[in-house]
Image (cartoon, rainbow, N blue to C red; front, side, top):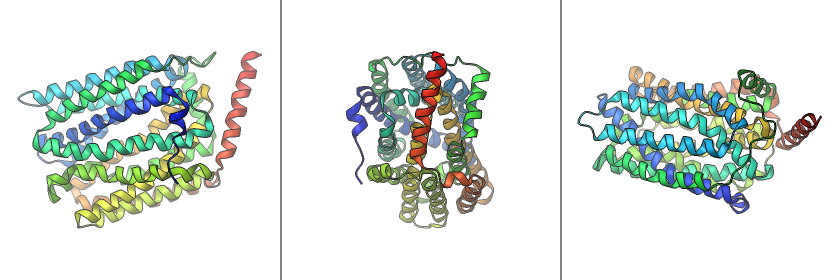
Length: 420
């Protein structure tokens, strides 16, 4: 049951990135909480405006993910990681300067959110394809669990700290802390080894991006991971409503709402050793995504803050189980010569739901109330996941061992083609 630490022992580069990202993510989560609270305050208590932060992040993410995936397959991934990390550091500095001004501007918060999402869209495909080069396929389930644990640790502790900081010292201190933590990730990306791009890699072009999308949609196992996650998050992503709930229950609970989902995710990660013995990945993703919707439904019904937090813990647990198996499908089965471009499609799939779901949740809550938005979202999530599963019947019976064999075959065919 215990988490498998083998990837940390197997690769120095993975260790560097793991701990560098772990430290910097603490600061990033503090900034996320601070941005939402700052927007809620500047807009006079509008959940809709908080939701629009996610909308501002969605458009640059969607557009630049195509660019990030194409260049990750063709160029030095280490250099991409370095440049994007510097860019994200500068964005945090912009938020800090805006917070220090006598009259902070909402448009600066929106712009900074968009810039940060843009850099992340370029960085993520390079990160995923770099990891695939330094870690063997059989350890990818363990990598996903470790990455999930890294995220969960930051998402558990940071929101609580952020809630205390923003309520006592203000958002300025939160942004300053985030800026300092970027030092760790910058050191990590400047210490990792050079990993050359794929020999005779496909050059960035519209044609090659289209080829990647055709490849993704030709595989039911990949298509299922995309549609199921979008269906779950689009209808039942609750983050935009946390400031409103904190205003109802008390500002001291703001960080706990953000952290509760992460507690569930961390629990799932720390007890994830069993996942490497499960091969019916599609089945587990469907079940976990549906249970996420059930948990959000009961979160909307809860009238006691501790019951509400318990529902979020359950939601985080099932979301992480889904994430571990989705990541296993991607990293075990996609050939490396397409890994960057496919990582961009994955990013679009797992961020489209939360970004648009936040905007949708804020919009509905502004007109019908917070709890109707959550309850209806949970119901629609379960229905949408069920419909998506019915549309892709092969996904339910997908076996991960077949995917590993397919990847080896496709990479061997690629090598044979290049040699000839």
